[in-house]
Image 1: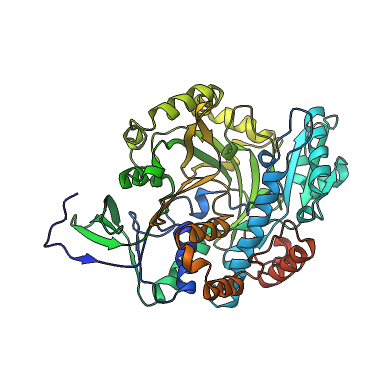
Image 2: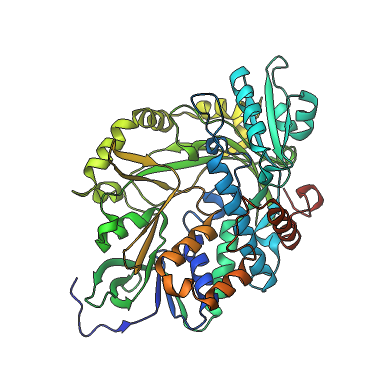
Length: 509
C-alpha cells in the first residue's frame, strides 16, 4: 500500500471495522471507560446491523444454553458434558448486566425495544433421545444457573406448553421436553442500533457508512494505517490509529489476512448459509409461545439445529422455523462469490484441506440441504408442526456464517464452531472470527479483548472501578457464586422487564 501525500490522514485512537453488535459493544465499553477516546467506525454497507446482527438474519435466541442441545454433548460413557453450557449461561448473564446498565443510563429508553421474555424449550422424540434429554436435565439442574428448569414426558402437560408442536402428533410416540421460563428473545438489530445511536452523539465518534476497508499497513512505531474506499465517490482515504478492531462478521477473515499479523496465519473459514420458513397465518402464530430447539441431524453444523421460534420484531409477533443450511462461497450475505477462493493462502491451505477431509459428513449434509425441494423442507417442518401446510409459510434467507478453521498439531486442521478472538502480540489489532453464540456473549468477548489489548489501562484502579459500575459482578464468578447469580438475575430481570410474558403484552401477530 502506497500512501499518497495528498491524501488527508485522520488519526482516531480507535478504529472499528464493521457496524454490528461486536463493534457497537466494544465502542460503548471503551467510550465509557475513557470518554476522551476518539473512535472511527467503518461499515461497507449503507446501514448499521445489515449483516448477522439484523433481526431476520439470526434466531434472536438469547443464547444461555437453556435449550440448545449442541452445547451439552453426550460423552462416550453416557454422561452429559455441561462445561460449555455453564460458560455460555454465565456469559449471557454478564450481557444482561451490561444491557441493564444501558437501560439505567438512558442509552436505551425501554428494554422491550430489544429484549422480551419467552420460555426456552428442548423437545425430542424416540427412546434414545428421551433418555438423553432426561440425563441432560439431571446434569444441568445440579447447577444453580439452570435452577427452575422443568422436565416432562406427560403429553397433557406438553400440550399445554407447546400446543402447536403436540397437536396431531402420533399418540404412541414417546416424547419429552424441558422448559426454562427464564428464556429470552433478543432483537440484536435494535440493540445494536441503540448503541450506535448513543455513540454517534458522543464527542469524538464518527460513523462512516458505505466505506470499505481495502488494505492495512503497519508503521515502524506500531501504529496502523488503513486504506478506506468511499463506495459512493470511489475515492480512497487513509486513516491511522494505534488500535484496530475487525468485527466484520464473515468479512473478518479476509481483513485479518490483509493485516498480515503472525497470529492470524493458518486461519481459514468455511461459509454456511441459511434459510427460514416464516409463518404468515396469525392464528398459527398465536398457538406457539416458546423457542423450541431439537437435535441436529448427524453431520450438520450447530447453526443448523432445528428450532421453532416465537419472535417479536419491531413490535410484531412472528413464527420462524429453521434454519435450513446451505452452501455459498460468500463470506457475507452481501458479499462476493470470490470470498472463499480468495481467502485461501499458502499458510492456511493445509488446515483447510485437513478440515475438509475430516468433515465429509458435513459436506454431504450441506449438499443435501442445497438440493432440498419445498416438499423436503415441509417434511422437516412437520417434525415440529404436525400437519403444517406449505402455503402457510414463506421461505426467507437468513444470515451468512463463516465457521473458523484453525491449525491443529494432530489433525492438521479442525473446523471450530463458536467464536475465536485473534489478537496481535502487542495488542494493537484484534479480529473476531466465527459465529454463534457470539452476539449473546458479546459483552464477555469484548471484556476479554479489552484485557488483552489495553492491558495497562484495564488493570488500573480507575478502569477496574468503571468495570464494576457497568457490570456489578465484574471480577467475580456467577458460575461459582450461587447467591451472587441469584441476586444478579433478580436485578436484571426487573430492569429488563423480563418477568412479563408475551401473553401479557400488547404485541400484534
